[in-house]
Length: 426
Length: 102
Image (cartoon, rainbow over all chains, first blue to last red; front, side, top):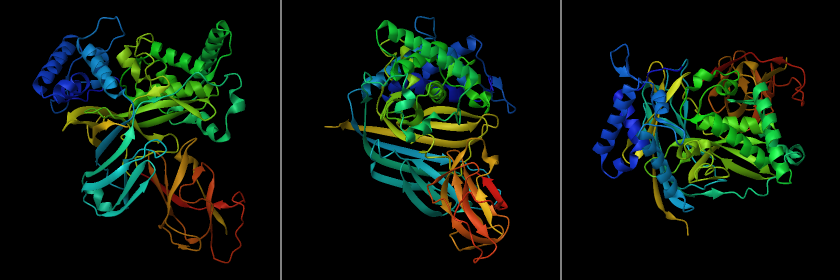
């Protein structure tokens, strides 16, 4: 999958604006932001990250490779776009660190459905926050475009489900959800983590769900088991020098440090990992994205017998509310600590940077819509392409994310997210 | 004859499905080609349709329940008066069904 050329020049420029100069664009300087992005593309080309013509003669580039070419570890030479990108992330973090806020969130989702083998009603879903985390209020759901009639609309925890007549598959379906809620920084005290040695004794039965050896991409393997054993020895040695016993948080910190040191945070083609042992393949790759970084942390924790789970939702950054995944680790009975390796970016991969542990034990304002494996919005009747790619673009003060087939470029889904901060919770 | 509907191995190793909606209830007659139940995973919906007729006699899974591969969700019979075991683990042939994933 590496070298898949899928983005046009305009698409690359649009994504660079969203990543590196969104605040300039939001402030009205769209042409300045685009000019910065255009110059970045020229520098990429001069470095050999180039466009190739597709069958129709359209120049296309591997957007993931282009992104990776911009990034560098702290202190290493880098493209001028990378500090701008990092500053954007830091600015977003600063904007949200004042604690819980009232927010209004809108998500418009567009599904491009494949013809069905036999006519049947279609099930399409829009995300809602899980009510144990954030309680959505003022909920509004609108079906904006459908070639088939709306048969029913059902609300459940974490989702709104639309059931449509089979004719809906004939054309793209568009629906929108809006709600308000309170969301914000969630800091966890990490100093009361349970002992690592007795982890199997204090785990309660329901939490064993999050010890599964195989759950989608989270798959245990001989090599990950060996890494987990090595990390256990490491954190036990560190604990010994401080005169105490190693805890679950010591292990999670060691796994976190290993991921930071071994990988660059970026995008990669999931299809290249296969389905048999994706994390085993990933271990030799130089890159993890949010889902795979979290999956790796989870797999290492599970290999050591610590329950850990994949959580997904939306970052509530004004202007840039994007889909995101992170991990939660059970550090003591009933105590799940969030961990998000996404802060590799603002820290430049440096653990000692002030942002190096920003999301270790705490996360900023985000909606939690899914806790794998049993609480999910789900694809419903929509079908993910076998190999897909993701593109980002700022539109109408929000962020559009498009999932396309990596080979045909056909759109599978597109969603536009918008968030408004209404002020801090008092 | 008693027949069971279980989650087939072909859905994948380690896969669990959630019962999304039953299209038939206990006591309902089933005709070949009729939809029985929708299961879901985070990636897809699986529509289970009968490839043979009979009667749905006993449900072991309600909507929202999770089922592992091999777990029995219902018993079917050729008639309404044939005795049906209460134990979902009781020996029974598999119902011939179609599992359409979208």
